[in-house]
Amino acid sequence: MTTFRATLAYDGTGFAGWQRQAGGVSIQGLIEDALAHLEGRPVAVHGAGRTDAGVHALGQVASFSLDRPIDAATLRRALNAHLPGAIRALEVAAAPGFHARFDARAKTYRYRIANAEVLIPFERLYALHVPRPLDAEAMDRAGRLLEGRHDFAAFQASGGGASGTTREITCCRLACAEDRIVAVEITGTGFLRHMVRTIAGSLIEVGRGRRPASWLGDLLVAGDRALAGPTAPAHGLFLVGVEYDS
Image 1 (cartoon, rainbow, N blue to C red):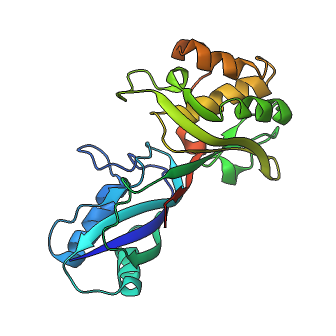
Image 2: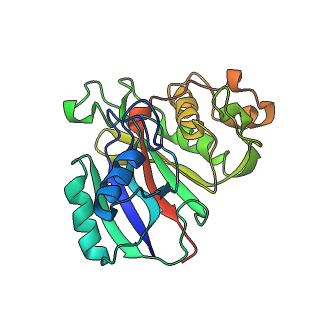
């Protein structure tokens, strides 16, 4: 049996998220179905992170094991042949002992905001439209207050089942990545449910001038989800990449 590591990109539009579930089509489910077709038996696929419905990925990482002797290049071609065009295996490599979730050391997410009076139609599925100008400098100052190890209870989705709410954010910065696009990029060792989207929603409140930059620090102290900004819609969020020791 050979363990493989795969780097995946997908358009999350219309999918029920990464995790296989009884209702709705999931990314994990489609990959497991494709591998089962190749292997002739059920294959369990482990992802580095469970992206929600509508969330996209540029660099999701998955691991799985196959009995069938097959080289990585052939496996990548076979996977892509059996997957819909919205999901692509970018890289596949043999990786003995590798586990995409348990071996992950950090993940980077990017939330894209189309900050223009008129939304370009091609961005409507991949960025939140905010037509009024945002104060990017204030948003960047606010984001830096979240860097470090903190209790992020104020940024956890209601009903989140995490046993603890302390997480470490190594970088939370703002960038004008493209023309008319403002990107919130966050790297951390772990995230709570909807944490990145709630941070993005709170930063937008700062950018709109509704709250001062210092408000993000106040939210960390208060630990009350009801005081934070709205959860930004899923379609603006991308899992950019996953970091490992080797």
